Length: 236
Image (cartoon, rainbow, N blue to C red):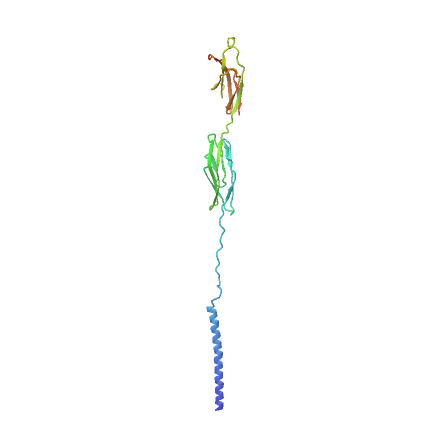
């Protein structure tokens, strides 16, 4: 009986050890499976990143000092300076452009030659530079066009007559008549000097041309002498 009991204990011990080893092995498998499928702190394979933000668009700058005076029959030009801090392409437009001027939308250049009929003040001119998103403007400014018509003058002088055509003394001299024009046979402008003591006169506001002049004397009774020889002066 003692031998059977000892053998039985040995088998039981062996069986218990086997169970213990098997249990440890199975338990290890369960931990491995759990860590592979349920770990809550694992980092994602491809983390999400925010898209880069672009800088805000900046408006171009435009500068320059336009000429505010122009002359008829003379060229006028104003070229502004424009810079875009972002390097964008700049285009231009203008408001209240004078009719005698042209405007370049690529460069902002305002240019033209006012005619003799374009005198006056042209107000509220504005030039705008744009990069397609933001604008900057120059002005408003005015351009005053004045005439460039050159004017000249001619000074005439003469000796007063002392006798009549028959040789008798002239006692009733009353004054003189100056006649002039741009043709020697068409002296259509007259100036009367009603003082016999005046022996010279300046004719002003003569436009560019060759002008012709004569002087005649007249008496208190309205008798007029023959005109003097024709004199001339060229105004340029």
